[in-house]
Length: 251
Ligand code: SF4
Image 1 (tube, protein in one colour):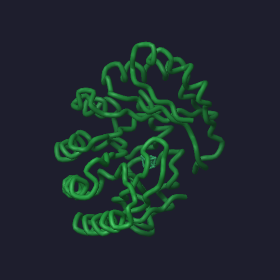
Image 2 (cartoon, protein in one colour):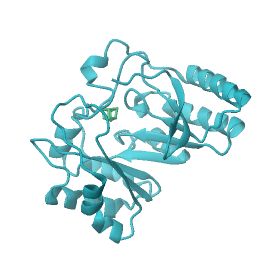
Image 3 (cartoon, protein in one colour):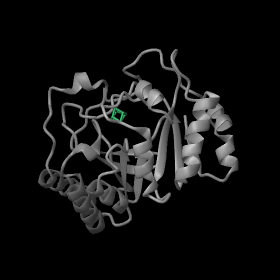
């Protein structure tokens, strides 16, 4: 299972180029209000040994030290991405950390893009939403169109409601990236006609500037999950592609 330092990388990815990661969760644990059956950080119950969240000042210091070193070494940085051992927006200093990160990006690597991978559960909070609006790429997860299916795939903490998340995402006026994991198990199939139809209706409502569709890539905490091929995903996503949505499929 993946455990990251507060500032990690850079790692090279085809999509993001040379990408520096920021983990706002515990260095030796996991904190998330989802417990996705495919999470590469493992189950929440296995990540409770360390619950200390890094504070804004620490993140700023670690990031600045790393950026300085990378500039001195002549290492390129194309992107700075908030991902890590859980949900970044649960860190109470998230808004301050975004401001600090944008200022450091402007100083050291002004052309690097700042991205946040989030499960969108905190997007209704004004301070979190304002911070998400400031970054180049707010990448918001929505894996299923109903509370029943979200319960199976994401196992959210009590109080989750798809309708509330969709309402929060409406505030972006389409200026965000929607990320959806497609998979199947013996209990469900993300590509079933009724699930796809409900999910596509949400996409049409939200009009995200990009839809990032992906599938399982690494070992998952739940056993028996099945992935889709790129061809299968392109086929079942065809209606949205034909309607002109920018759909990026990753196998
Ligand atoms: S939202 Fe992300 S970090 Fe949280 S359980 Fe799901 S995959 Fe893991």
